[in-house]
Image 1 (cartoon, rainbow, N blue to C red):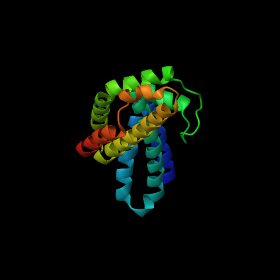
Image 2: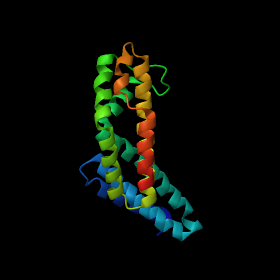
Image 3: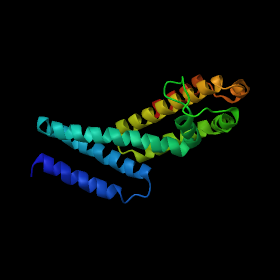
Image 4: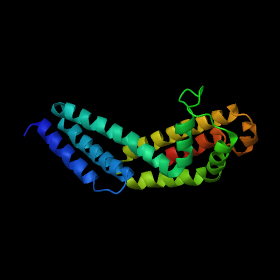
Length: 187
């Protein structure tokens, strides 16, 4: 059996098994862990499996991005939805012009739950990942995305008329970064 046929068979099997999971997040996690395992095995195979390993690395990366999106939606859904629906990537324009009434519940909710949500997210990643390095990559990607989205929200608040009234509820980027560093060291 050629390596290409083997890849197709393994890929098909993994996708069929992944479909058995109830949520997208669990499907991506299953594929992440199994792609990571395949990569580990293929590293031992040497140069002849380099192309096959590259395929599973790409698959791992795409599932990592999807898993991070699902993870952040679970713990910071209102923030993620707000940023996606209202703020462009460049922070210069809005996809939908927000007002103080739209932003206030998002800012206040984040201020109340962000530390607990970070801890829960960290614990989930630590217990779900079969590989320390992959777990660290997932956690770093999730926390970097969270920091980026929260920064975009903070900048949005500054630009909204009357947004300064929410300044007392905004968590500083420094505080979030400090907590992220704590979790990065413990994984």
